[in-house]
Image (tube, rainbow over all chains, first blue to last red):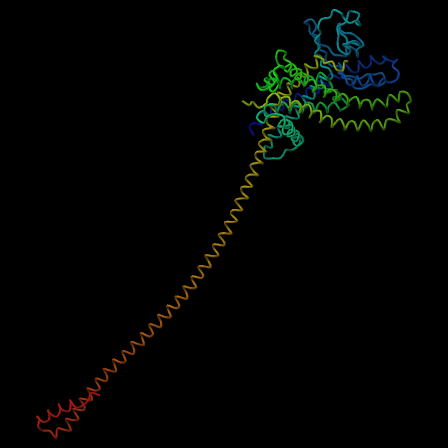
Length: 378
Length: 164
């Protein structure tokens, strides 16, 4: 035990160091461009009257190329994030403040204001507005708000859990869990006993347990960080379809890479089904394959829809104040206690949802993985 | 529409981030944590089993102790009983022996006394006889100067006189 703890110590220090590095990098990154950018945009969008709640809510829920912090009057304060593009074999790196909140094009790229690619970076003609009709494929690997948030929470997660693991090593197995470990241990036991062991055959549990635990912790932490309204929280990470589809794909591949013969037999030659459903038209295999594809998609959609809906409701209640306030100021003040009360209520509900959705995603992942490794009986 | 359109960039970064987290946590977090939890569970199970075993052993020891106590008490009583009987027997034997010896002594004494008396009686009779003879000699000497007559008379006398 003691020897093991010593050998892993440098790793922990590296993680510790990388957290500090990342945070300081973020601080440096946000410090310079924010003010200059803010000054330039003071005189823009004077014509916007009233309060468009729908637009605000959608803007908060969607991913974006810069991290919007706050508005003060006409001053938009946001952190520009790195844009990484591969176009016609050439890499383009620059910060998103070059787009000036989507107002300008830069190097022939701009954020589409409308159309199928609205909100994404597209290639434009020399006039800087018209989309290039002959544009070839544009690979957009920009570190968007959600990407940065995912990286930050990943680092946080690694930092926290390695810390807990160190704690375990320090106190050994003959001591009750202490500190952060006592918070984590019920979750670990919950995932192990109530998720993994109920869905996966006993012998295979240990193979998939680290994956399920990571999945649960990752979704749970991202859900929680998403509820926090201030930087570095507030990014709607687990309410983004790209993220949830990626996680579902991880489950899909884990499920099928580890699947055994019994499972494939079940897909292509379902036992207990009349032969005319398999030959000459492979009806049953087709149905099974469709089911296999739909399962992870539903998994992704469920998480995406639940988290997005939660964010929408909270933002809706908060927007109510400004919608009414824009008409008559006193109405805004009058409604605010009620709105705040509802937002508080919704936040508590979201805390619950954060756990439940992490649980459901992990549970269904475990069930799918368990389906792939049925006990072989011959 | 933008809401449900997956973007390649975010998919890429999520894959990278989640993949890294999975690899790092698998090696540096879950492995030691799960190992320690398993170890602790084994330890607790073993301790419970051990405590049950110790309890059982203690109970057994208690039983043995009680049995031994009862046995010891019984043995002690037996020993005491036996000692008492032995003692009584010894006393009785001693008494008998003493009695026997006493009666022997009395018997011996009695015999000795009888023998002595016999001897004394015999001597006295002899003495008496001798004295009588002497007296008679003195008495008869004058009468019987003749030795022949005298001897005849003595022998006749001796025969006539009863022993007692």
